[in-house]
Length: 291
Image (cartoon, rainbow, N blue to C red):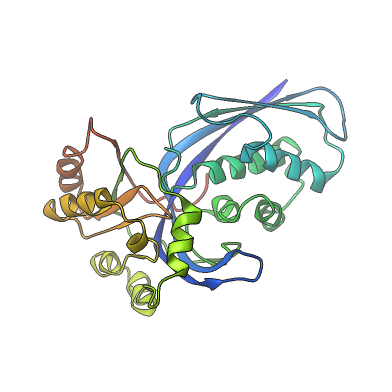
């Protein structure tokens, strides 16, 4: 038996602009995504002989996470199998040790799927390039290609068109997730009904990122979906962060997690103390690459 464990990092959206609905029902996005140092651990164990369709099983440390064919890790496994054709083993066991909260807008499921693709590729002798893995990932989920590439990147289309950007400067990122779920389809539906939807000052953000000005970057954080969540707790979390000296704070993805950028660890810890014991709360840092 061969085993490999891949660290699957969460992501945040520094910018999330929704540019319009497509004919296929998806939305065109303009998002700057950032991987952060909150990780799931995905272990793949393989054994047996060459096989065209290996048996796949999934286990997870969190009982509420489905471990059937609906799990994105399973879909990623089958997509890789389809791309490669014959696999060098006939049994694939996937164990997901969860640390990224689900329903948070942190791409936990997508990152697990990306980890499966990366792990299988290593176990198969790195047969496919990163670009090829990203193409497979796009067939599994819109955020999977970015989760394969990692770092700081502009994601366009439905998220599959990725342009690497200058790295986010060193900082402390506080992630807080309240104990609520936000419906992604409902958020997009509400956004589609807006007359004057919110968009970022994208040019100003890019200028700030390219200059490495953390304070200016933080002031231009933006999320088109934040105004349609209709959840008071989101604003309450941001208000507490502002009182604690956050440089900037915004919801990530379709929620419900909120993150704040701090320029020093002491301020971040003092703010985290306001949430610890009440909801998911974690201080992390930007990750410059996937692994």
